[in-house]
Length: 114
Image (tube, rainbow, N blue to C red; front, side):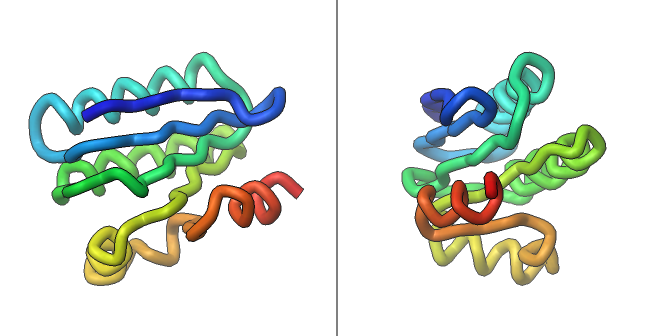
């Protein structure tokens, strides 16, 4: 799994994630990346999932866990460009309504940073 991190404006962070997120090193790497963003950065974190080939329940679990931690700090964890498979996985797990989800980064920024 590869994560490209960049700042959006002065406050927010974009994480472009590529590859697979599953039990093992990739899920741990995602958790470490989210932990650093939570500890070191301010503002909302936008996760671009467009290049994710696969995510399992462990990866979804990491996202859900960090969603709560971001909310505790009055910050948002926003999903951008999720595949149809990821959206369906969230729906089946009854988690789709928990995550702010957008098809385009521009739409996410307009809605979440207004």
